[in-house]
Image 1: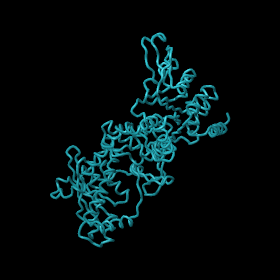
Image 2: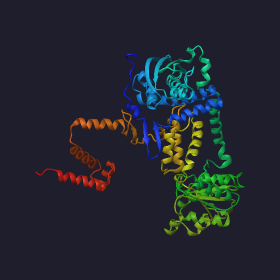
Image 3: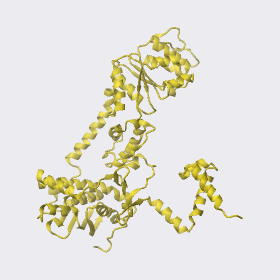
Image 4: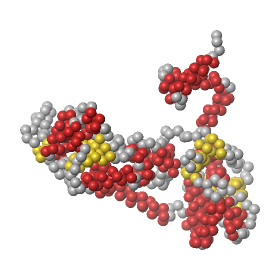
Length: 560
C-alpha cells in the first residue's frame, strides 16, 4: 500500500447507516437497504446460471452491482466534500466494506479529476461472492466477483464522470487466497469494447426510459381536457368520491363539494364538467372568498351602465359568461347574505338580474359549489341561509383529505414529478426511497396542494440526472436519531455530528451539569419573556416539567 493511502475515519459513513426497528427499515443515507442472507444470494446466482447461462447471469449481476455503486457515489461529495480527492474517493471502498462485500485494501491510486485520468488497484479479502461461487462450483477458471466488480466500476465511473472498467486479476473463486482488481478508463483496455454492454450508462434502456418520461409529461399537459385534471387515486375513499362525481356528471343536479383546503375541489368540479353534456360549453370558476363583499354581486350577476359611480359600461357577470356550461362557486360559505338571496333566485328560476337592471335575464347554467366550512354551523350562527343550503346540498360529495388516502400519495407524487420535470426542463431518476417514506408519513395539513408544492420544490432543488431526495422536499427538517453502527460494528444510538461537537465542548468546559441545566433553563425563560409555556416548548418539555425543574433549582440554591 502506498504510504499516502490510508482510510479516513469512518464515523461519517457509519452515521449514514441507520436502523429503524419501529418501521422495519434500514437506511444508507437516503437509500433504503435490506439485509440478505448470502445463502439466498448464492441460490439466486445458481438459479440464474441454470436458467439463462453464465454469460447472461454475469451481465445481470454486473449491472446490479453497477447500479449499487452509482448510487453510493452520491455520498462521496455529501460526506467529504471538503476533503482531498482521494479521501472523497475512498468513501466507495469504505462503504463497500460497511455493506459487507469484502475487506478492501487500496494498493495503488492515481487520479486527476481535470483530465479524467484514473489508475487503481485494490485487494479484496473475504469476498462473499468468491466464497459463494466456489462453494457452488468448486475452483473455477474465470473470476466470479461479478456484483463486486460492477460496484467498483459503477462507483468509480459516477465519481470520475467517465466509464471506468475494473477487472479481476486474481479471484478467490479461482483458488487464490484473495482477490485483486485493477481499474482504468475503458478505452485504456485493449478489449474494453467487449465490456461496454455491461456498464454503458446511456444504453437503449436508458434512452427508452427518458422517452417514456417525456411521453408521460406530455400526457399530463393534455389531461385536463380529457379527465378534468389530476384525479389520481385508487384508495377506497377517493374512489367513492370519484364514483359519486361520475354518476352526477350526466345529470343536471346541483353538486356541493366539501372537504379541507387543498383536497382538489376545483379539479373535481372540472372533471364533473368534462364528463357532462355541457363539456363543450364554458367552465367558469369563482372564488367567493377572494372577492370583496361590495363587488361580489356585480362580479356574479353583472352590472348595467350607470348602476353605480364608475359603471361606465354594461358588463356581464360570471353567470352570463358560464351560460351553456358550468359555474363553479368555491368557498360559497363566504358569500354575504344579500348575494345568497340572489343566488337562491337563480337556483329557483334560472334567472339573474344585473345591478341596475329593470328586468331579469334567463341563464342556462349548471351550478357546482364547494366549501371547506360546516354550512350547518354557519346556518345556526345566522351566516348562511337555510333555504339556500337546502338548494345547494341536493347532491353532496365529500372529497377525502390526503391523510385518509395514503396509498394515493406515491402515484400522485410520481405524476407531479413527471409534470414538473417537463415544466422545468429537468431529467431526474425519480423520488428517493427516504423521500417517499417521508411523504407517506407526513400529516398533509395542506393536502394535495401541499404535495404539489413540495414536489415542484424538490424538482427545482434536485441536481440534473439525480433524484428528488428528502432534503429537497423538507430542507429544514431536522434529522432524527437512529440506531447506527459504532466503530466496533455494534448497534448503537447515533447522534448528529453537530450534537457530538456540542457535547464535547460542554465536557471540555468543566461546567457542572447542574449549573449548566440552570443556565439553560434561565436562558429559555429569558428568551420567552418569562412565559413558561413558551420556554417549555422551546426546551421540548411540558410546562409542569419545566416548573418542577425550576423549583428544584431554587430549592437546591444555598442559603445566604
